[in-house]
Image (cartoon, rainbow, N blue to C red; front, side):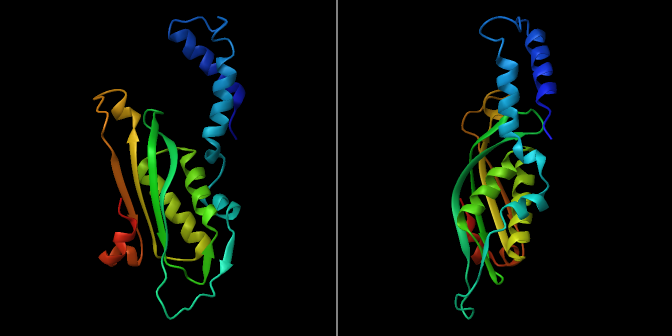
Length: 189
């Protein structure tokens, strides 16, 4: 679990190390606010992929005509995360998530919730796609899952090279999405 008291203590130390007075009126409550923010934006760190799958396992029996190929696609799911290398914000993040039902379909809002919860960890963009695919696969029992992600990374846009328009694209393609190029069109950005 997230230790808010430890976060407050360390934020006071960072403020002091930056040369400011952690008791100054405008900043005195900052450690408490940062600890509360961390508890919210890193909530996903409290759960394993299996626990997230159990949390959002709301499926319906797939009674649609099984003679026809079905693909479920959600596009442009907006969320954010923090880079584990710099603790920098990954923003303007959009995921496309697709799967081929295998007897069960997941409630659509649950796909968005899975993306949101996976993003609430110190992460790499590549791992975010892997984690989302793992969880969707656990919930739906489908081996045919695809996740593409597009994002800006403030460790590139706001520091270092400071290239404002750089975006990173990643793709996690599994099962038929990996082997059938025509299925990949469903998740392209």
